[in-house]
Image 1 (cartoon, rainbow, N blue to C red):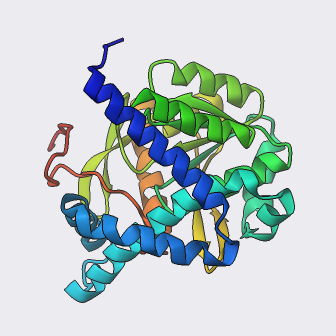
Image 2: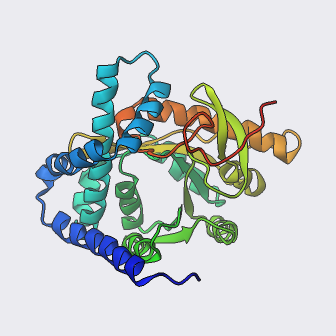
Length: 309
């Protein structure tokens, strides 16, 4: 473990303290005012983070290539508003009752696709984009006594990651950091017939496969497809949208995970199908897609190399 300088440690402590203070404040906000408060919080972020704003604009242009500059500016602002709402709501969730959570969400497709999949006993892999407020659906799920494992990107500083992990664990989720040990933890969860949630619209590390995503070639994580093909667990695209003051969790049909050839070819085929589903889910509400990082080779700062065969 690399030691931190006193200055860096103090800065990290301020960051963690800020999130904790925000959590305390969020719990005091009346539910009808959550969206308005999030808009106030999102405004300085949208104005001050010019590089992030430009990256979001690039992504919006991919989703809506014919949108005018004025429409894109509005959508970019709404992305930051909705990202702030995601945090405010996540901070509030521990203080809400199970009834408040249940009354605040509808789940079209849950019984037909996800509940039915779990009856087969192989678990289920739910593939999500960075969109809307998925923590709310996770809390709804665990309130029903259904185990859920979530694989998440480690955050810096580590104390912040641990704080977010403890927040999710308080809902009843099992939190697994993305890394070399994640695969074993996910396999155990699926063997126990759990739901495993994987954010699947951005490749960070591990194994990847090249696909076409919103008209450009890029890398997406190969993990969701690989796990589904190897275990037989259904791969189910889903997204949780903000809808007024409530939420809509859209659960799509499982993707065909039958083996047709070499594993590598099947992984690429299944990941391409998943990419198309993610496009569909994101296009339903691009203003809620809070992906602020470079995600295609043409984006400034994209960290990966891909082939151009």
